Image (cartoon, rainbow over all chains, first blue to last red):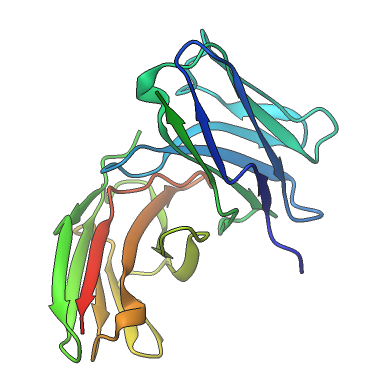
Length: 112
Length: 112
């Protein structure tokens, strides 16, 4: 079974620039999550999708972050404009339901 | 949002020694407790999922226990090896919501 694919692996941008991350979950997994892991902290849930609908985006900074999962498969997470404090690893995970995630290898973002 | 605590935050252990660390979480409305191992530049890897009070799970030299009444779990590593170096994350979930809330993790370094 193919895993969760994420790209890019690394990204360095200047503050106030925009950036987008892409995630392709495991085929058939209805639930997709984006987590942000800042150095020294645990992963924090940004948004949870069930198919192409948003279940939970309560911790997504909506003034600068947006995410979509238009066809209920791939998802993109965008930051516009980026701030220094957005430097983190962005993890995508998918689940068939009933708990138990499969994670991608993440995108490490550095904002300078 | 669940309050999940892990201790210690970091740990250095001599190769061959055994070690353990703790995850504490709110016991009310508990459904499951997940342990993940996250090596640098790789995807977080699922180790265990436990649901019942008194559960014990084992995978090779790694084992975990669960106390749902008092809200804690221990992870044990016997005879540490360099490949055990990683961050170990725990994440509980509640009834009716498969979303995982992660602790800050325990960063384990095995000294050869």
